[in-house]
Image (cartoon, rainbow, N blue to C red; front, top):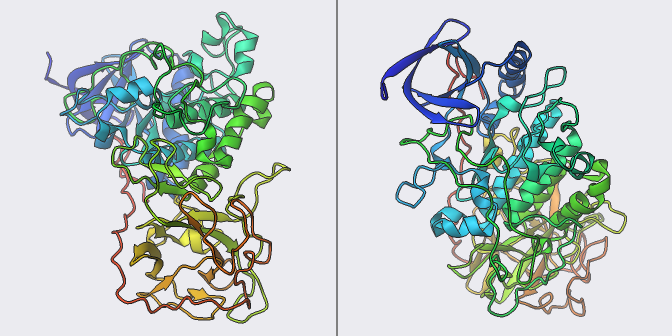
Length: 602
């Protein structure tokens, strides 16, 4: 009877009580434990011995290898991983952590209680159905994509494949900037029988569609003429997923988006072309009456394949709007990768490019902007391409982060290989190799972190210690000047004047200035370029005559102060230091699985 409490049994004999209120999925029924922490997914048709062996491998050694080691608490938030097998009434299933409340739409909206599958954020039509508060921002979407790229990379490093990767196999919250993978009982594990479910048609790689254009790609894995998953197919599916989330339309077949950067007058970015847009998938199934009601099995009903809108048309923002790094990866994935799977970007490449892009975002001044943020690397306008709003600031600083070898005030060394505003750090050059270094676009309230001051420190990720997640400084536009407020950098120094800025004080930013952020091996310096709004670098003795987009030379910015260079006024005495925003702390781990003992240490 509905609402009654039933009891499943774990392989170790532990009783697991759950409510007899199922959420129906495609091939399984999902129930929730009485404590609300776990979802129990029972298959309608009992898996054969080979499938159960694969599931035991996923819930046992494979889970332990990822969640029980270093960074386990981090990965527990980015996977809803099967934790143990369960049995009830002769039916086999598994237990997974219930979904975090952030992955449910607010109850007061039209879709209250629905699960935030990636499907909801993968087309302009779906986005328009959501409330503005639920849509998130470009910054949140990029961070969600970064979570997905990291998760896929982690699975690939363990030899696991995700043949069902699609907008239905991930949860996305662009409000908090987080995402996780679900449906991991269908992972492809080397040495075990493949999962007997067809892949999502819209995420199939070109080689699979060419090999069996009629029925083959929809056949279960391992059947004659069916789809065989590979690292190349995963890379294609990941590229499609990221493109859908970032641009909310189907990726182009030929690779390039041949549309103007700025929408025509009267057309907003993301508006559908005349005649409307095809729906991005079927109707989402209702969620449960409480957070966790969609469980770990991804049980919302809908069609087998996702259907997205047409290729870019007039007024659509192209991939180039997010900078040359991401645009180059998309072109590789959908142009060169069409005929050669080995040319498709790996998940680790997406991770690095997404992290670099986050550092080059500028906040839009308009409160009604659909994106809230936009990319700026000094090579284009400071205005927002999504809504056309000017930056509202007289200037925008850009820091090129470069290695410093033996630099000091009056020293003989120099920063090596700075990337200029027109050649942002990490941008692929003519030879296809990325340039060294990174860049940071400055806005009022922007943070400076450890990974901006030291080489070899990854931005975020599972192995970043909690103390490394704290900002070391922040930027402020104060009394008409740009300031870097030092919070905890012991060696912040202007290499032109030799003046130091101790923690608790601020240094003025000047065009052509070189600031050493950290001393010793692995230390980085910031080459400062200040760009006038919708113009080139700010006029100064150091930057006069440099056209917009010109890259400084290898020994420092053109005419600017490198190690031992000409002194510039950048004293730290700037009066009262403006208050900075509160930093965010690390996220906690998840609960222990039923019948599996205590949670692993983070």
